[in-house]
Image (tube, rainbow, N blue to C red; front, side, top):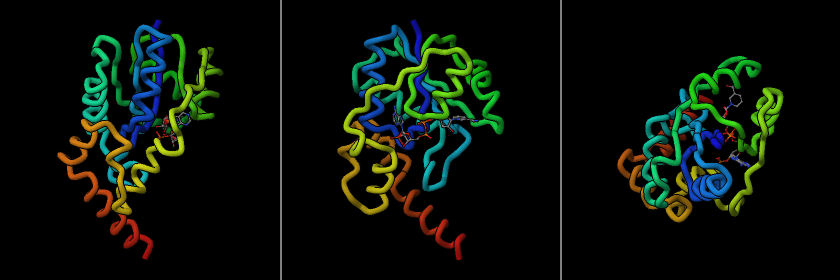
Length: 175
Ligand code: NAP
């Protein structure tokens, strides 16, 4: 059986990897949809879809998850929620069940006739994309919240400087 997990993964952190490992205890293969693939270079969505694919691929390898167990598919948003499930299905291999903690995602897939499960979260307060991005901005320890391979990708693309630059840009736009 194949399952689907969709998330923006801005950036990939230890919580995502833990959720993926748990899902793989229930299904044979997991499809990981990188949500809002068109977005990058904002404080909420700093990293491109390609950068997120790189983070995820390297982190899954680091955790010893074989490539035969997953598919990583970038998924752009669409203007109409009512056609989003069809849009996702057009881009992904077939799947039976969906894993999501996002209420809108749950509702849309349930209405589409899919079995939806809320995945158990791993130390949610600490492991969240928002917390990682906040710590990057404040110069606090964010490295311990992400796999070391993700840390290396963020170093390679100079991700922390990007986020700091974006703050300056967004503050200037408010003025
Ligand atoms: P999201 O809107 O990206 O994230 C919302 C929050 O939920 C984030 O803080 C995320 O944490 C958190 N989260 C992630 N997995 C969770 C879980 N299992 N339980 C509780 N909270 C969890 O939502 P998402 O679920 O990660 O991603 C959904 C994607 O689908 C988004 O890209 C969204 O735009 C897309 N979508 C598009 C349409 C459309 O185009 N019309 C419709 C519906 C959904 P982290 O930041 O730590 O990951």
